[in-house]
Length: 92
View (tube, one colour):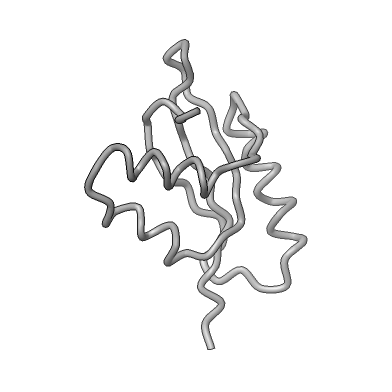
């Protein structure tokens, strides 16, 4: 049976135009559902729901440290640590 999960590092753009990174442990097929959404409103709603409560990091090193911490806390992580490049302003 598949765990179908991963630690995902989302790359977003902040208000100053610089990248920020957020880390989440979730179901991989849930992350894949983003590609099926047709409207900006649906995509923004998905991002807010999926990445709610995550801390924004201004550098990749801090984001990967958080991802490694989450990885170590999990019993099984099928897809490991995966970056995802949204490159949009994080919806509020």
